[in-house]
Length: 408
Figure (cartoon, rainbow, N blue to C red):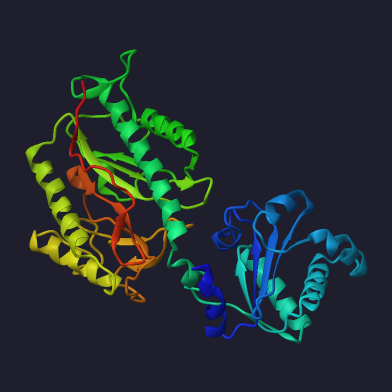
């Protein structure tokens, strides 16, 4: 949480932190500014608690809406520094930041965050480190200070994420109604003019529904059918007509434009009817999903639930990534990930890497699945859940699990 930042600075022995970039590119900067849109902004905070937000004159009102003390870049005019350095843009930028640091008494170990071209960042920070003997440029291996702060959400953030979930599930409900309104011809959905309804048509409908609810499709939604559903991140073939009796994975993960928070939910369904063999596969995934959801709780490591998922699938004789990390069929990914201002963030429900104990404020996806592209099917069921301040689960997805969507 934001309130953790001072202690996180102490833990890392940082005397100041600097976050530079645009809020559209840097979710850390977006986290600090609370959704205000800024380009080329700089946030500076010292361990003593003094903070400042630098913005252009064009976006000064956006910056002021954050509640931070605002300075304009024009207070340190770049044109003046260019003139003083003989039009050397790197030297000019270093000189400008030197004066900013001097004005705010920035000394010692300074952590740098945000988004920039990697080559430019290396050159600039190296030059800054060399030119300012009173500071030491510090970088972190993820999870960095902001990754740690953002890992837990406060009650206000969870409510914003609940609103994003409500909007996302409304899109799914209307998409199901849209599909059900179509007639069929020889196991293919058709439009009013008699042509096949395609995945591209459905995606166009979904995008309109997202726009109506002020949701951004930052990453393309997944609406994949049959064989394509057997590859987890196959977004779907735009030209493919919608067929009855095939698995369709609908994975939607929009961002709320008002708050910047994502939601992540997946439903797998059949149009018209479910063949018996594939219905059993759907039920197998749902059984695993239900058992994990019934067991997951605070105080346990995230990896426990990945291992639990693997064990359950293996008892059903499906291969898993736990027993065979190279498998391309069966259960082939981790169980879930944190959701917030990025669609994938900490904590992870995975046996790989750092193990985090689940705790109040964590928001994670739970998404077991099975994938067999050569056999023409894939199934995934996913909800995003939060743990409130008492450790109780809040299902932010809250949408039915329908195996079959009826059509006319």
